Length: 314
Image 1 (spheres, rainbow, N blue to C red):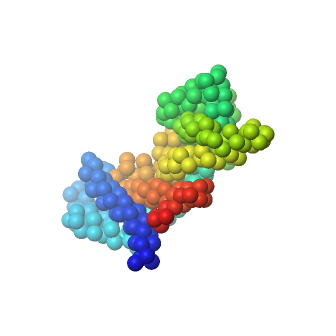
Image 2 (image 1 turned 90 degrees about the vertical axis):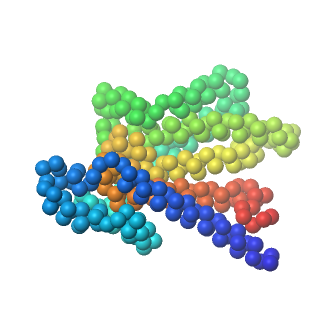
Image 3 (image 1 turned 120 degrees about the horizontal axis):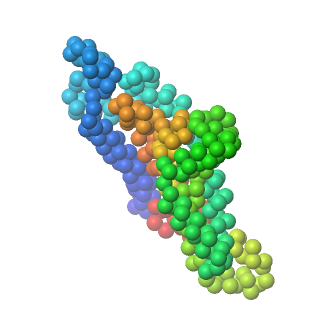
């Protein structure tokens, strides 16, 4: 009986993500078919005859009943076969494989920007609470949260690309083209992250072990970083895990503004064309990224704080 409990816990932890993915797949399929617009008419135009439309509809499998299309879609998902694009006739999995490196590159760069900005700001704001440094850091945070990416991106393009000519306007051509999209995406995350670092660290700095460390004569830097920051990381990691899912999801707006050839740009183009297989596959990939990152975040909790056990009942 005692051995069955860990097995049940493991099955429950594996089953929940599968149910989430099934729900997302079903919802995406239904919503994309409810969006106004016929892929056949968009591909052939208004001048096409009824016979041509019916031929193309049959070739794409859109003449079948909706429940049958749904069954074929789920079968393909289980087999990791997302079909072919309506427009390019290429396998969807190949199209995603081409775009995924660009999205991962942008996500990693944006995460680095966020961490480099947020941690020093959050630590300074907590250590210098209620001072000008604290107010300036939190002012930056409020500004970063308030400015949307679709406004920040064009402003950076006008300033650093058009006026100063330092970076390319759009596209993915070398390291220089990565700077502005990474800053656009990373500053928004840095604004949220710095506030979390500050509030979490302030709670920890009032604990008894912090006062004990200071009483032992340890340097303030060691007290803050080694004793304070590590114990304040749990809520920060929660936020990072959730936001990393957003970054890996493609950062649709940022990729669209900078014409960055990633998953988000691919999804937007597919929605505009009513390319059902591509839309379904990209949204599933984004959902899968969320699920995997959250599972990894749970495991990281136990590494940071051994007192935490996930799913084993102790």
